[in-house]
Every structure is written in C-alpha cells, then in structure tokens.
Length: 120
Image (cartoon, rainbow, N blue to C red; front, side):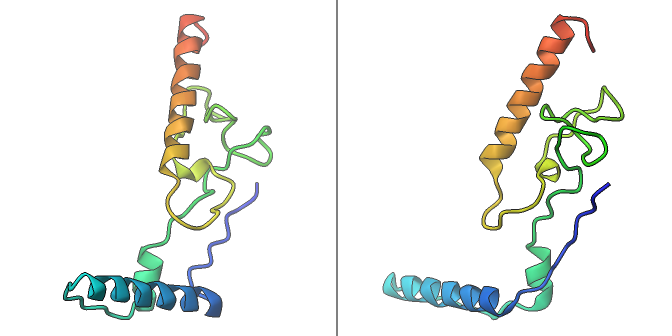
C-alpha cells in the first residue's frame, strides 16, 4: 500500500513566494490607508496551515488505494470516505472545496442509486 510522504517545510522558492505575497498584501493595504501589522511567519505557522491529502487514496484496486471512484472503501463496502484524503496528493494552492463537494455529490448519488437497487 503506498504511503503518503509529508514534507512540511518551505524550500527557498516557496519562502520567496510567501514573502512576495506578504509584500504585495502590505502594498495593497497601504494604498487603501489600512493600518497593517505584518509579521513574519515562523515554521509552526507554515506547518499549521498545511493541508494533508492522500491518506485514503482513491483508485481502481485495493492493492494501491483505499476507496474506489465513488469514495467507497475497497475493504468495507458500507464505508464511504468523502474528503480531501481521497486525493492522490495535493496540487498545492487553495483547498479544493468545489472538487470535494463534487466528490460528495457523486458519492451521494451512488449511495442513493445503490439503496434504490437494494445493493447496500
């Protein structure tokens, strides 16, 4: 079973992007005459803001994934996992809320159809 590898640190490029973003935010707030206090993020803040993905990976086979395309557990047929843990990994950026919602709707449709056919 593949395991997630978590790297909870900022490399040089990521730190430069974070610092650039903080500078741009400060400039926007200044132009709006907003008093802003900007603090440098420490390593704890970087880790605390990380989103973990891939702990219950989605895939076609039980040998390399936890759930199928309908978020149904390969092992326990009445267990459905519908959150970011079913993603193979994180693409970075913002949390993929709409994708998670779409997965939830697909799983709900599958459950409703399965119940109607008395398969659950």
